[in-house]
Image 1 (cartoon, rainbow, N blue to C red):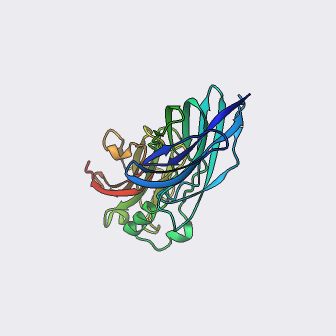
Image 2: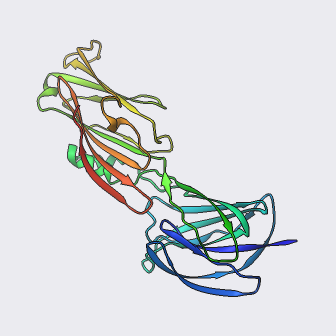
Image 3: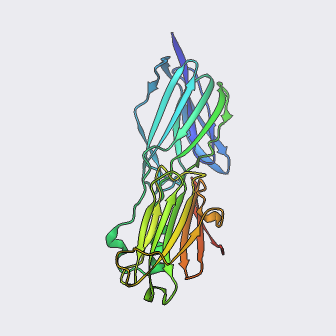
Length: 303
């Protein structure tokens, strides 16, 4: 026996308006979605119920307002009749400022899970770093595309009437970047070793001398998620201690001292770590990478 499949016209981010009809009927609707007006066609389709799920062939979706870090959007419609997986490849287009997708689902109660697999993201490139001072390097790191997988789950009864359906796409991924800025004259007397410890990973060590280019730390991957933390340990060594054998002084900075060292989903913390003989001062520019846009906010934090 075959089950009716509903085709949903989805306006991602802001909202969705959907319609269905019987087999062999065509229906065209013009509706106003939340915050945006969208015109689209809705049509009926049928698929055999399958507990193993139906995989639709992937289709293209104009980028519109979808952020540059998103390469695909997958929407799984789950119901007692079976699953239908809807995959969309994001393409660049200048003739559509919205993202409208046609999603299939069985009539009845559905759980819709939307995700953005295989995100597009950047990593620092050595040749791009050459010659940059502290502030230039900080800007460069902030402008890299972050690793971010967006998701949302919506439960809804699908009938033959028009219904609104909205995805609020959010991410648990954050981004942490640091540029180290010793105060003037400090490296005339000391060499520094900075240990950056992750709550969920292997510590990384950065050596800073007067002869070095500007040093940095960058964390933006699947492990940089909400609730994880960083801590800093700065050790001072005499210039003549080429083997780094004797620690003259140690400074510490943790997320208890500075909340900018706490990863927050959907936020990038772009930090300048100012190091003096007596303290560590973190200045942070926070950026919010939402599904619609990236917004920067300047925040200075003093220890």
